[in-house]
Image (cartoon, rainbow, N blue to C red; front, side, top):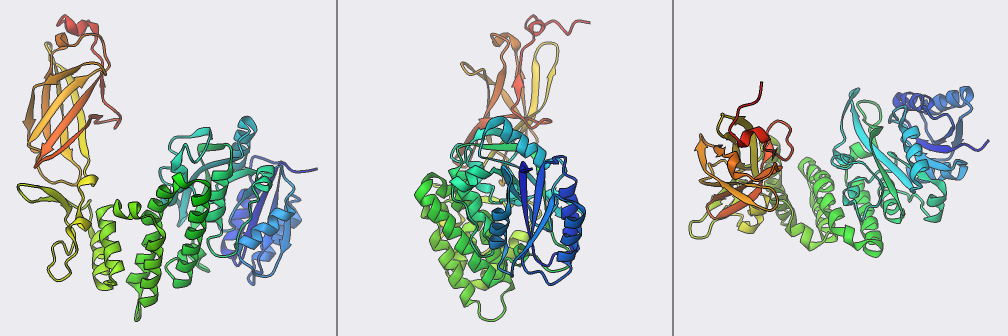
Length: 480
């Protein structure tokens, strides 16, 4: 019998974890599957555990090879696979029991080439959000594509997915050697697929190891590891440049946000000659688009500036400053006739270092915060009370304007301030024609900076909307 799904599991010296992984695969609610275990030359007890599972459960098949790395091991497993669908699991991770049934079920319904789902990080036995996958699966969608749903740029792993086997072969997908072999393949699959299903369900538990041999990704600040990461970044950029150049800026932004952190960590830990790391860092930055570098958040621009200049001690000070902030860093105004807004970071206008002011420029990072906390009927009018401030600016906004809008009309409201950030406004329902819904538009001005936006609902954190009941137009109270 040909199985519906083949799951490839490469393993190397994971004796403390492999049992939990294989138990999770054996407990899948989808029975029509095979699990191909590829021993990549283990020298601990991992192979004995795999042999026991293969002896007890006919769905488990064990093959072996000399130690070549996870990419060649996965390729070996693919050659043995017989299923219509293909999936991968790492031997120290855990797969929730319904994951493959959900992923395969979506593909059977839609005809898409691959399905992917949410990930949680397994830390000390507890599940946490996977920072790598944050924001990706908040809005599930079927039959989409990475060029339409560019948040999928953040979905760079192969193991939270199920692929159609014929798509995999048609696309010519194959894992390279090296540490970060899955990143180029994951990006290629997303671009080459004609349809992708995004599930909101958690389909994978990605472990952060707490004992035993440290995983590859937990040695990510070592120089050889960083070189491998750069090689993977170059491979992805070359592919995107040829097949989907519109995704390059998004990919570069993700590299700046996530990957460069490991480079900074390596420089913080460096003892002695940091020259090779600095040279690698400059090569790393040279790979990325100038627009993305120029529009990076101001604190990250400061870190990159110090890296380029080889100022390791100062870079360490900025990294310590970043970690030491319990809240977000303030943005402060400088100048009277022409005011600009700068991050309140170390070395701003330091005469010795002479870091250019534009490195600290944070104007584009400022966001209006406006919410309605309460809306009550007084018997004659509605009274709104809420909050207006600017994210990262610890100052009262001197000028605040409020309007109600239904998309066609704008009704200005008289506004008074209450405390440092509070606002209060009255709404006469007689001025509002139709039921609405109405939304509250806010304009805030401080030192030449003008921000506009819509107020949020203080409790639900969704867009605040106001509908006028019929009884309120006549001034009558709520009927008993």
